[in-house]
Image 1 (spheres, rainbow, N blue to C red):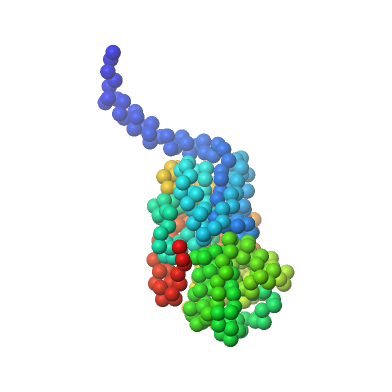
Image 2: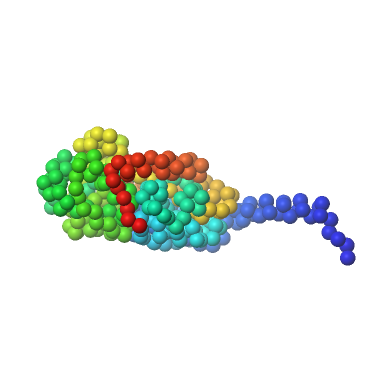
Length: 325
């Protein structure tokens, strides 16, 4: 039996290995895509995933299935993504907590940088401080004065311990010298519903979750956490303008895939999301819900997350902010 010519065989195998991901990317997607949302329905994550998921379905002809997996500040959903096949058929929307969790939890079931492929950072969005109309305050200064009269008695909600909304109020407490009690919920939808019903008197949440209730008079908006006002809420001051100079917390929304997802597929997803976010109607829907649309490359997204991971630990330490594991 004639022995194979290794000098010819090795280059052929190498060529096949190199071209396989490109062939895969050319046929991708050939089946439905699962889009994990690590929070409950009705919040910013849910809105962004459904908005872009519908457009991906239209352009690629494959259904994008939104899978709500709330709990533990996005950690449960993140762990699910890490354990998914790195083939582009499971992706996840993440918000600010993705970059905050490494500073808040002593041990995570994944590596924030190395266990994920970052695809595109789609938007920035601050949290807005809202109160139930029954709370006798109409400004941040009045809220601070009211809270100081009732140390430890005023509750505030969030979409989970360690989320952007939780830490936004913790920073306000630290800067204003307040004592209030945290009540965590499983997602922005649940926490917003709680303050709308009067179950809790206040929270900071994504503008998209709050704006409909503010317009209906069921919530009162006091301030936004960003350095500049939000286009969708031009009459609502920033926290710095309202009472706390130097206050700034800006959230972000981005898309991840498992690590080792072929770069050709990551690039294809990035390019399509980049195209979608530049569509005028998509851009307007984002802005109307309080988002500032952007489009970061995978490398830019990674650099932003690394900066967030360096930025917050000193703040949390100085403020004594901790999340129990």
